[in-house]
Length: 497
Image (cartoon, rainbow, N blue to C red; front, side, top):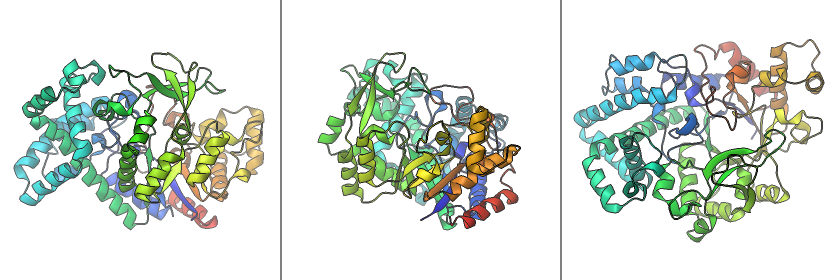
């Protein structure tokens, strides 16, 4: 069905505690989407962020980010005091998202909440927590132990831990787990509260006709419980160091390529065990989200492998991935899971054939369509089975992108949109929004920054860079106005979305 939605990560919501949460502002945003005639709220990966604060570099492929836990809700449960001194320190971080500093405060508060829960919980609440831990033990036990050890080793990457911990000596881990059981339980409690708050928000959204459109990174971080606990699934040497890492080859946008640094999967190993880990991952994602975007979909057909230790992506090679064998296994185990393929970039005929056979919607990005040639990213080339964006979290905002074009490029855009030379910034941006809405693509998702006509100071991420404001943009309170909702609803009705 034709539908529309808004892309904004939960961390970008307004909040007095430094980053958006699963609290009242998230519920208000759902109400805004409902009034605006939207169907989807697209968010970025919700895992605990690690290196560079990127949601695509998470400590776990299954855990939720404790920063998203709303503390006011915990206060309402009587688990923390609103006057806690650490709460006051958090509230001083209102104007920007300094994730690392924020979590240093929040971890202490959540540890207090865990202690209060153990003291105050009635038998039904205790049973619910224990049931959650048992049901999710297949990933939660390793994750909680990993995070406890990470702080025990002063947040060093696990590859720098003492060998008996790095190589998972059974006796050593058993002794540590017994000695630090309370700390490990705190990490489990964080996940318990995350999932309870998240599911309550999703239930609220779904009741109002809003679906959560999530995101699944193709790769996992080297500094993650997944690789520490299951090194056999990845291209590592006998000392558990990466042999080759992920990235993209050089192109016109990046002369030295993109060096992501994630370890690569040992697809032969995964094939032999029937892709069990991937099936579990997709199944878990399908419970979290109503629709899931698979990042870097072309990497399943063939992936770019860069020698570990290289400083750039210039000397990598393309290796074959599992292609349809993986997706056939997923379908056989789970049925038709709603997925969207991030199929941007250089696509070979083999990748196109994989997408066709899989049947997932692909993606179109308007910003990519206004080069000198007809690249395929303009609406007259779209097919119905796709989702259209002006830009994603990795691109410039619509206004920032347009302002960066030369005179010829700006003229080309205005001509395609049917706008005059003296068109205002707002007219340009809303012309792009209208063009996306009117396209044949069954899905249409617009970044919140573009709905607010913001420039590149509000850009979410610049790929292959660290810091510099990446992932830190936050919407101000009151910007989801009735007028904005009215304009969006009018577009949705006009173009049958």
